[in-house]
Image (tube, rainbow, N blue to C red; front, side, top):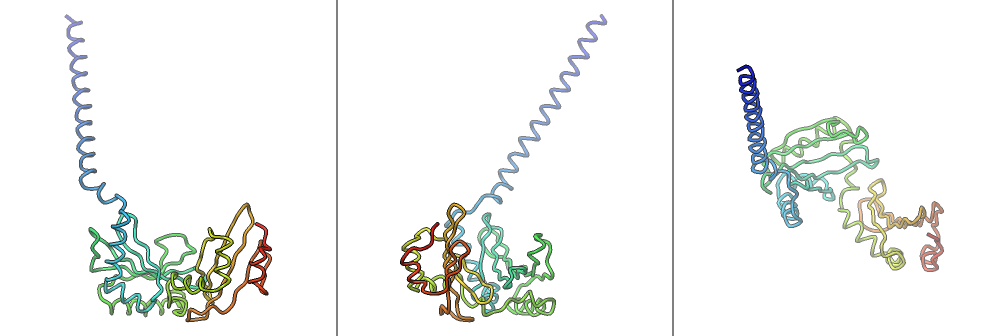
Amino acid sequence: MATARRKARVLEQNMKTLRIIGLLLAVCLISFFLFILFIAPDIRQLSPEEQNQLIINAQQNELAQAFLEEYPGAKYLPDDQGRFVLFFVEDANYSFRTELRLFVSDLSIDKTALMKCSDLDQNDDNAYLIAEMVTTKDDVKTALERFEQKSQSCIPDKRLWLFSDGQYIEAAERTPQAQMFFMKYPDAVIYVDRSEPAAVDFRIDENGRHINLRIFMEPGGLNPTDMFVDCNDDIITDDITDYLEKNKCEI
């Protein structure tokens, strides 16, 4: 009799355990389906076509246009997941960034945006000096005025942001020296340096050695004014065409 009761209790405990396991599995399945329905679509990455459309939509936004009126060469960066688009400029030392963050819903730009000036040396997205929400073109200009009152570093030299990276690169590529460099080093990487004066670098790094052609641009313009070659930290300023022609740099 006692044995039968023990078996009944064990069976009852096993049934309770099975019910608990079944309940946990049901919760997991429901959570999974909710994730698929509501969360997963928000974290998927945009296709190249969607990113291009997002950039077009952002550039046509009146807040972005107001920012670009002040800084025509401002860089832009779409979020991979389509949550926002950044338009930003940085000071000559790359220590401070002033940005306009356009928020996005289904590739459409929201009416309210965030502007902030951040200290890049802090390496913290929350380490900003000042931030404001903006909804009109006048708000953008007013925010920039307040940023300037907060810190001169929040308002980079506008002469360095009159032109886009593409415009600086195109101007530098027209020089005979850049064309010769590309003939010899077709895999060269191109950088735009917006310290004063702005410059374009054509660079190759191989096996710990490097060669870099730096072309300086006139302040506030697109005319090359000076250049040098850096061959493994040896700086060449004279007869650059002849130097490149004779391939004197060993890398």
